[in-house]
Length: 136
Image (cartoon, rainbow, N blue to C red; front, side, top):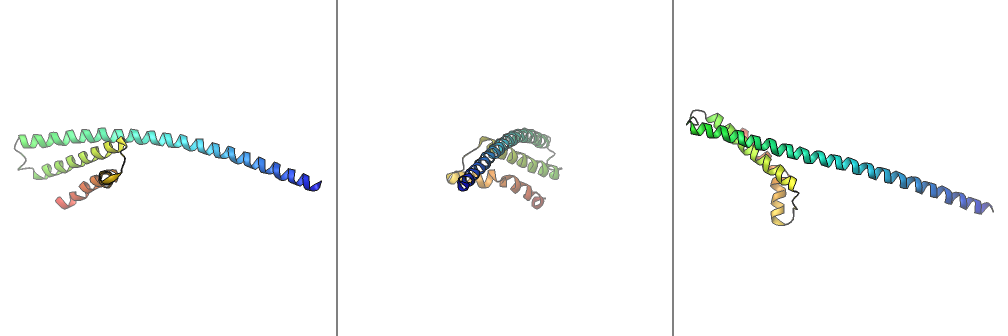
């Protein structure tokens, strides 16, 4: 009889632990999903904002370069022309990188490898930024 009571107690305690553990797992899973979705929404909105800012940068730098060449001042203001050209490249690289990251491209095959190396890793942006001190 003692053996049966001990078996019942161990079975009961095991079930209560299993039920408690299951509820804790369910709660942590749903909490993780809410955090992931809000983080994902923030990432999408941030990427859209970066794309818009990059477009404004492209338009502004292209307009300044056009004005310098149209007024034939590009020979006198070489530093301004170089800086605007580098800013134009950086804005374009930023635009392409974040726009392609928004598209969620599959990185498989040779093309996927090069997209991953240049675009997704942001090497295109940093390559332009690191050449600025070398060119000036």
